[in-house]
Amino acid sequence: MRSILAPLLLGSSLFAQTQSDFYTREEIPLPDGEIMEISSLALMPEKKVAVATRRGDLWICSGAYGDDLSKVTWKKYAYGLHEPLGMFYRDGSLFLTQRPEFSRLKDTNGDGAADVFETINSEWGINGNYHEYAFGSAPDKNGDVWITLCLTGSATAESDWRGWAVRITPEGDMIPTVSGIRSPGGIGMNAAGDMFYTDNQGPWNGSSSLKWLKPGSFQGNPTGNKYHSLSNLPTPPDVADGSRILTQRLKYPTFMPPAVILPHGKVGQSPTGIALDETGETFGPWKDQLYIGEQTHSQIQRICLEKVNDIYQGAVFRFLDGFEAGLIPVTFDNEEGIIFTGGSNRGWASRGNKPFTFERVRWTGKTPFEIQSMHAEQDGFTLTFTESVDPVTAADPASYSMEAWTYILQSKYGSPEVDQATPTITAAKISPDKLSVRLTIDGLVRGHVHHLMAPGVHSAAGTKLWHPDAFYTLNEIPAQ
Image 1 (tube, rainbow, N blue to C red):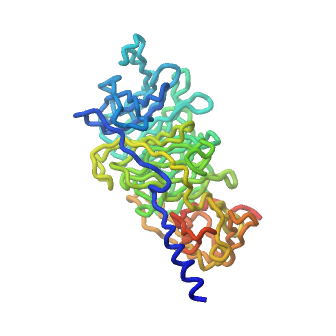
Image 2 (cartoon, rainbow, N blue to C red):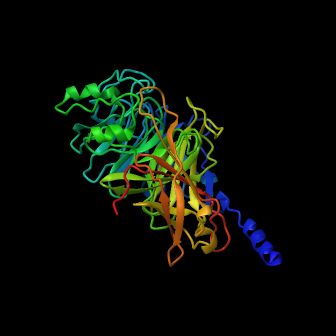
C-alpha cells in the first residue's frame, strides 16, 4: 500500500500554488523626478488613467494597459489640489473629492491640462489637522457622490460633520446621511449598489472593518454625534463604553454592525480602497466580490458578502500580496479585467519598502484552488470551491477547524480578541458536483468573527488550498 500512496502524496506536494501562477503584478513607470504618492485613480477613454497624488498633482497616464510598459507617457493635468482621495471621470470632466471640497475639473481647449476648476460643494468643516481626510465615491444609482469625513486627528471632531458620511447630489446639495465614522480609508459600492467604506482600528473600533453605509445608520463611534444639531437629524445613539457591538445594536436599531471585520494583524491592519468585480470571470471566478486595499501590509484582500435578516455580513480571504508600497486607491477595469492600484508609505510604514508606487495586476487565465465563497447556514456554513474537491479530505471534519471571538466596544484604542469560543465541526457533506461542502457546526456565536481553517482540504487533482483561511463575521444566524 505504501508504494501506491507515496507517489500520490509526492504528487500533491508538486502542486504548490504561488501568486505568479495566477496573477501578474507589474509596476508602471512613473514620471522621472516626481513624488508620486498616489491617492486617487480614475479610468478614462482611450485607455488613459488619471492619477492624483497626496501632494495635489493630477496626471494623465497613457500606455498603462500596454504590453510594453516602457512606452508609458505622462501629462500633468493639474496641480495645487488638496489631497484628493476619490476621483472619477464622467462626460469629459474629472470629479475629485478633495480635503475641503468636491470639485469638477475640465480641459476645454484640448491642450491636455485642466482650465476649468469648479467647486460643487464645500459645506463640511476643515481646520488644517493632518487627519481630516475626505474619501469620495463614484456616483451611486441616484447620481449622488458619497463622502466619508475622518475625525480630527482620527479621535476628536473639531470641524463640522467630522465623523459623518454625506452625500452630494447631482444638483450640488450636501445631505448628511450616516454618523459614527472614525477613520475611513476607502469607499465603494457592492453589486447591489449599496455603499460601503473601510474604517480603521482605533477608539470604538476594536479592529478594522468593512461597513455598510445604510442611510440613517450609526457606525459605532459617537465622537461626531453632536453635529446632528446642525440639521433636523435625530440624535445618534449614545453607546455604552466597554460593551459589545451585538449588545448595543440590539438596544439601538440604527446601530449598523461591521459587515466584515478584518482581524487586526491577521488580515492586514489598515484597509483602504474598495473595488467591485463585475467582470464575468475575466479576472477569475470572483464576480460580485469586493477587492479591498491594505496600506500597512501592502496587499489586496477579497470579500464575499451576503445579506441575512437585512444585515450584511460575510467572509474576508487573503488574496494578492507583494505590492511595492502601502496601497490607497484600488480601481478595477471590468472590461479588461485589470486592477490598477497605487499608494504611499508616508506617515504609515508599509511592508512594501518604496515611498510610492503605481501597479497593475492581470489574470494569467489559470484559476487557483480556493474557497470561492462562504455562506452562513442555520447550523454551519456552506463553502464553494473554485474546482472539484477531493472527496476523502473534503468530507473529513478533521480537515477543518474553527475559532471565534469578538471585540470590546470601547473608547480606548482598539481591543483584544475577547469572548473566545471554539465551535466544533461535526460533519462535512460534499455536493454532487463536488464543488461545495456543507459544514455542520456546533457552537456558532452570533456577533462573533468565525475563523475557519481548512489546511487538510485538497482538490481532486491533489492541490492544497492557496489560502486555507476564511474570516466570517456572523452578525446574524439564518433561520431554519
